[in-house]
Structure formats: C-alpha cells, structure tokens
Image 1: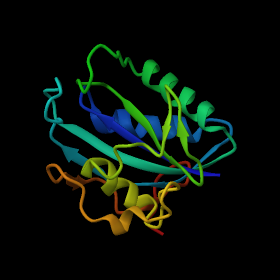
Image 2: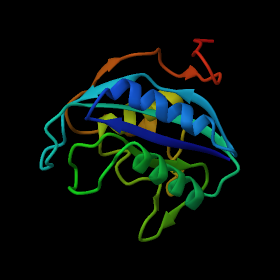
Image 3: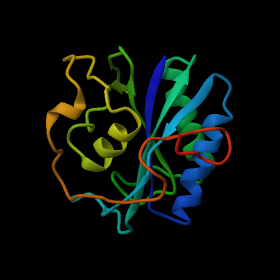
Length: 174
C-alpha cells in the first residue's frame, strides 16, 4: 500500500537530519521510498514554543507495514535523532508524521488518518502534493489538490525538484 510521511526539523543541521531520516526509512524492511519532495523553509507555528525556522518535506512510500507499524517506526527514528517530546509545537531535531495511508482511516488515541493537519497547514499540504498530486482524502473521496490553499504563512521552497524519485542513493529528476 502507498503512504505519505511528513518530515520536519528546526534544530541542528536540519537538511542533513531530514535526508538521513529518508535514508533510514528507505533502509527499513517493508518500506520502499518512491518520491521525496523539496525541502520547504517554514516559520514556527503561531501559538507554539518553537523559536527556530523549520525545514519541512514529505515522502511517498510503498509499504507492507501496517499503519501502526509505520507510526512506531517514525517514533523510533525521532527518538534515535534525539527528539524529546517536552513541548507541544516546540523545536525538535526530527518530526515524522504519518499523513496518509491510501484508503485507510483511523481515529485512535495515537493515530488519526488521514492526518487532520493536511488541509490546515501549507507546510504539510504543499510537500504532500509534490510527492502525491492525486492523493485523495479517504473520508470524502476528494483530492487534496482541489481543496484550495491551506491557511498560514507560505513556506519557501528549497532543495531538490518537485516530486523527485528516490533511488536508494542520489536522487534523480526522472
């Protein structure tokens, strides 16, 4: 099944941390990274405690893991990067959010699918649409691309080209 994961970092060598997280996802048995978005520079969310600007992006994967197994892998990678969950919307070395699993909905205490922030946050929606332009909300059947612009400050794109394919090594634009 296909899934999308958002990546973000506001501490340390942000780009290197995000690229390493993509490599670690790709090295996970049962996960094949298909596409990687550009990195987007984004100010901290209003109301949060973060002070540093974030780099955000998204990956589209093909996986044999369940949504719960994907969530546990994301949490393990965050912890391995030094993430501490001390403050809500605070600075972090690595933030991985399971955004969407094709055709799956969930409303559990630890996992909500699709992620409720997709249409509410530009820094989530724009990278998702780069890697999966035809992704549909499984609750409504509507494409997120048809929902208009998400609110909030517009992130600044930097890094690799839109929808770059992942090849387990250097990225290519084909």
